[in-house]
Image (cartoon, rainbow, N blue to C red; front, side, top):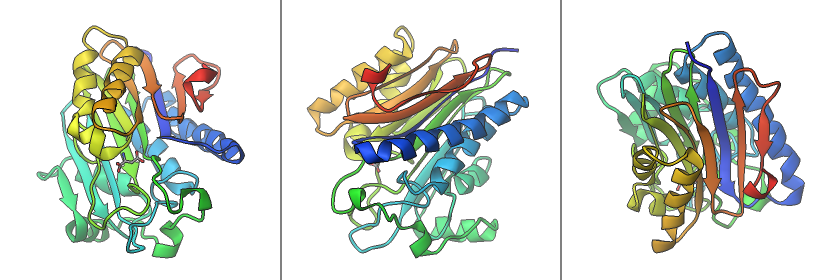
Length: 287
Ligand code: ASP
C-alpha cells in the first residue's frame, strides 16, 4: 500500500480578481470529490473522473457547463481519461449535448477505439445513456470569456493506494474557435498521459502549441530525473518556440507531486493522504 495523492487544475489562464472566489470554491469542491474516492480505497481512475465531473458542472470553468462556444455558437467539447496501469485510453472529440464529457470518455476506456469524434462520439454518449444538457445549459454566461482566447481546460492526475496512476482532461476548447477545431486535450502525449512507474500529467494552455511540442510526452520523459515541478516548467518554457502559454500538474512514478505554469494564473488544488485539507493556489507566486 502507498499513500494516495491527487492534484487537479481549473486551467492555465488569467483570473480576474472577482473570479478568484469562484475558482477557489470550485477547486475545493472538485478536490473533495476525488479525495472521497481515494479515502475510501477507490481507484485513481475513479478519483480523476469524480474531480473532473465537478469542474465540468461548474460554469466558472471552460469544460462541460460553461464551455466556450465555437465561432458558429455551438458547444464542442473534448475530454480524455487514461489508466496508467493498463495504458487504456478513452477520449471524445468535439462531442455535443453531454453534461459530462469525461464520463463518456470513461465509458470508452475499455473499448477497442481510444478516441471517438463528432457525431460518433455524441451517438455513443446517447447509446450509453449519458446525461444530456441543452446548448443553453452548456453555454457560458461568463462575459470574461467572450470574444477572446481563454485557457480553461480542466484536468486531474491521481495515484491510488495500489500505486496505480491516472490522468483526465476536459475542455470546451478556445473561445470562438473554428468548428471542428481540436486542441491538445484529447490527444495522448499532448494534453495528458499516464503510465505506472513513470508518471501522470494533465495540461492546459494553447492547444496548438502544446500539441506541436507533444508536451505531455516531454514531461513524462523529463520525470525520469527532474522533479515534477521542474519537468513541467522546462516543458512549458518550450512554448516560447511556437507561441502561447500553459500549465500542467503531474505526479511522478515515485509519487512526487508538482505543477508549473507560464500563463498569468493557474488554478490548482492538491491533497495527499494524511493532509488535514487540500492546498489551493491560483498562481505560482502564492506558493
Ligand atoms: N488546451 C485547450 C485547447 O487548446 C485550451 C485550454 O487549455 O483551455 O483546446
